[in-house]
Length: 128
Image 1 (cartoon, one colour):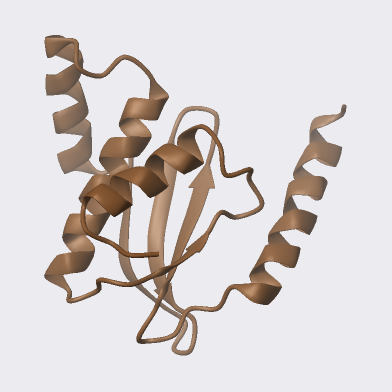
Image 2: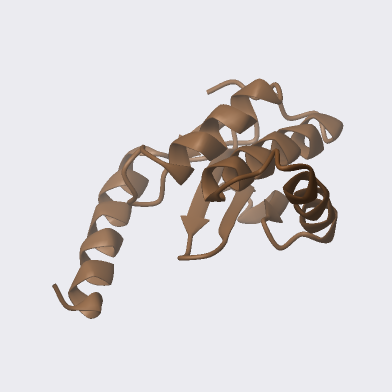
């Protein structure tokens, strides 16, 4: 399958999911994007159009933590990194007083790194 077709299909699925998932001030939307190497997550209030909390595997604090844990051998793959990003996002959200969110998988299957990020966010204290 050509890469362009693959991206178009994901964007079509994303639109279909986005019709049903909407972030409010009480329950903002946790949006996920993954590339081949990195994973990004942000909590968005769709009524205002503002990003409330954002983090990724490129965030400086997370990069340092990943480096430390890789040296210890605790992080073996991208699933572990995604879990760490989800947990860190939940901690930042709790600091801002956000406890409940709506999960937006962004057209990806709820599997692999997307699932690991969601589980990390749940273990950090977010409810969805």
